[in-house]
Length: 244
Length: 314
Image (cartoon, rainbow over all chains, first blue to last red; front, side, top):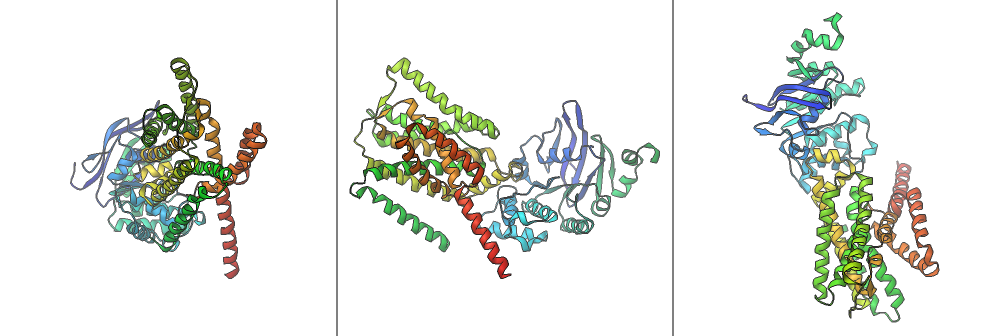
């Protein structure tokens, strides 16, 4: 394994019955890197996120976090090893307060705090994502972007080695989108290692160091956003043959 | 501990102290018998809610544990000292709960409910079959010199213990994990929580309490047979009482237990055949009108008043 590699997928496949959703996909994520995972709808991006986080087990292939083999482990073990995620459709814990939502990430996983420590720590994570004012609110009072921020605070609270953001920017309006991009950029500047699935091309260009493009579960390009997005194969996958 | 918690502890000690004096009253036998019922259902409903409240898994296995505890005492009372039997009942409840939990807690909601209901029936039929074929009698006599007063004190101590356990769990990582599981099991798993283990621990705790209650009240029956010890009615009563009071607060179920037990006694005395009807009607009314229980209703009214007061000030 190359120096500084945090997460590595080696020929990972996932089959659902007759459908091969992910086909011998390999890529590596280095420390402090933001890796974009992009591709047309239905190309298997979210499946890859689910494979890394353990929501699904790969049919074949290995996934390593550092030197640890995490593929095939249940999600709780992978979370404890240091992978945190947000969900494509935001998942908030509705009967808990905003603070408790953030605490949920820091008690049982990679970070294991309790008592006053976890309260302070979770409050700091909420401040980090711009929700410091809402610590004691009920989640019912939150707007969509605020729910996303709380979810992000929960993921950050585990101090993960790899943070998986599954279309974290989807559904935001243009102003919120700028705020959102700024927030993820600030995480990147902190040195977080992030894998993000995204459809917003602006976000990919401004956030990602490298990206992997998948189509029908197969990797068709890898490189800087500029190179990958100008690749003929990628243009064909997105726009069809005439435009390639 | 905060000042509020110290206040709560002082209040709880005072209430339990006063209640413990109840048997010393003159001519208190009717009141005492009603109080035994209330204390018994308080322990059963509160311990049931410890598990089912946060996880939303409705267990109808209370009668299985309760009956197991009662049968341990009935079967061993002439051979083994009573306190040891109560201990065996508790261990038996724990083992049964662990086995059932391991087999079923992966089942989703409805299947779990049906399985737990079936479990009590299965055990009842098995005990009946064994007694019919091997022991030659359908029931067992429980003849002891344990008085109603002693039973009441034991139940009161159990009630104090169940509140203590509930309070400790609520303050612990385990309690926090259960609240997260109840909200979203997927998020729980991705936060590093072992949900199966957390649910199992709470299911075992509630099973132990139900089995010990069965053991404690067994001397009250004098004669025990499967139809009494494993009656499914008990499981439903416990669920309804807990839901009536409210399961999201530790002291919620007891708010449902007191009026329901009193009403039950009244109806059982005047119209003995209509008790099941009461169960059905109570269940419908609770589900339609107070899904969060009396305590939940009161809290939402207080919140609304508070919000209105706040907006008036602002």
